[in-house]
Image (cartoon, rainbow, N blue to C red):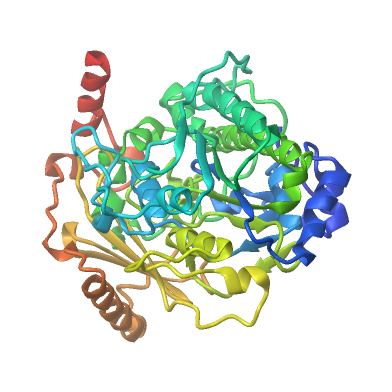
Length: 514
Ligand code: ZN
């Protein structure tokens, strides 16, 4: 269970981090941390560990007091963690297709999870991370979650398997949790085995994604949930006071998101149950991260391996009364951890706050690190200068995110532009816009788009979006909206949503027919 750490604004020292590290021994963690002084070897190994649905702010190393993430924290304490790092789409498949190719969802064409909104398979002509490294003589292998629309091309795919797990009543498990231990075990076997070539291995964990299933288990108000320990508090951006000023797809998010329909009648205590469950599933992922790192650092190749940890997208974590992820680009769903440790990484426990980072940067960064040519035509930037701690070049002016649809029942195209100080969003449905001053309003509690005194900032961001659309040949303004207006007619507020909206009813039908 997540422990309530003492309130501190100070970043813990390495010693404190290692003392808190449960899964990794002090000696191993110190060994991992000690490697940053070495130069990157000629042919370094790379181990990528992915968590699914992990908000940056839920990680201890990023300051969360409720998280129990000693192993991820230890990794961060031995390397660098980027602060302003964003997904390019807060949804599994589009995000994954993007970071494996270094291309935005409108470029890959993979802009949904499929089902009623089929997406193409990544074409052979589009370079992928696995194909680039495989062609360069690397052994490339992916353990666990895929959901990639073919973007894992070039990797040997080790299919996910399920293991039986006992679960406390408050935190039931589904296939998300049941697959992770098998993926971790197979990755551990691989890491311990002999290697003829340098490797690029991916350990792709589902958790804390099991939180989606948890919401489905707890539809409507529920009492007496046997959650052990103290409940986490609600975030200070739990309420939305200016819902009427938000874009229509946000005002009526409940109508297009079955998880939010399931949570519509929750009490405040239920939202706190949700947070406790979220931290629980996160701790399950963290424990497996520890087992994988333990295995890596118990072998000689551990010293020659860059470890990269990130998440495909985040989770709403009860911010704005939202659960899981859908439509919005708020910090909780869009901002993800991004941590690197290993040879050539400069600094221990260093927080890199300056550059705006997106997951499009993964591919150029790893190519650069391994001395491979970066494929042309990519929007991302190599983060290697910041990773090394060198004098970095010019940081990108902005990073971008996209939303289209989850399964195709409601299609509400949106774009997000995050600049140094602001976040700007634009939705086609109802021409909705948002502008947040993240320097003064990190919880995104006040939409500045309607405010006259921010007209100049708003105009600047509109121009930037136009430039971005042009530069990336993004047809955003000609995309179609598909939203059933009957479901966007109840009193504002997610708690006023009654019954099953069209997408929810269709889902139930699909589930029955499957
Ligand atoms: Zn609704």
